[in-house]
Amino acid sequence: MKVILQLMLKHSTGRTVSVLFALTMAVYLTMLLYTIPAVTAFAPEFPIFDLSPSGYLFSYANELLDKLGNEGRNIYLHRQLPLDFIYPGLFAVTYSLLLVWLFRKYFNMNSKVYYLGFVPILAGVFDYLENIFIIKMINSFPDLQMNTVKIASTLTILKSSFTIFFFVLLLMGFVLFLKRKFMRIQK
Image 1 (spheres, rainbow, N blue to C red):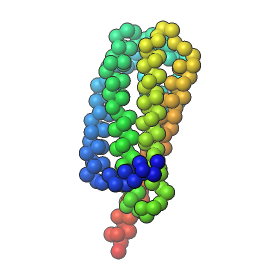
Image 2 (cartoon, one colour):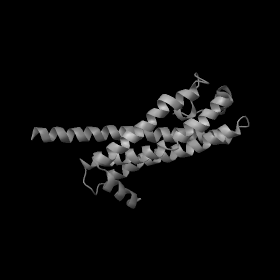
Image 3 (cartoon, helix red, strand yellow):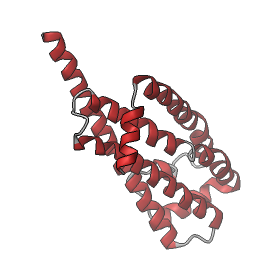
Image 4 (cartoon, helix red, strand yellow):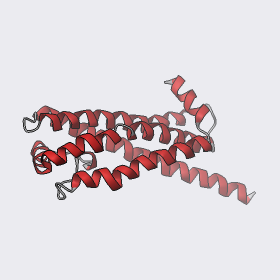
């Protein structure tokens, strides 16, 4: 863990974060504007699993997969999920480095606060695991297993929780960054 933290500290430069942010946002916007709407067009009243931060029940999973039909499930499996296997890694690396970069502006290099840079990594790990279970649900439909849905739902909740926690940390990091900038202007 310490080795990863050292790598984050080494590579958390404004330029690296900017390039990774642009790439991450390009993938995210492609999903948001193209692949997710392509899937949800088949069941507009049902948010896809990835967009259900509070999880979902077995009945919901079954009904969503049924409403999507073969074509919707195929688009989910072959368009949305491939991009969603790129995005979590980008999210994890980009936003870990962003947090570390922001914290470097305010905290000593030996501070334990840098361990908070692992929060986006945890969100990314849970996103990958969620995707694996979504694939399992799609491929097993209509013979869904209750445990598969429970695990997938739990992973969705964990991914969402760590993502929200990241955004809280990001907001705190920007507040500290702006506070430091304001203090410099005051001097």
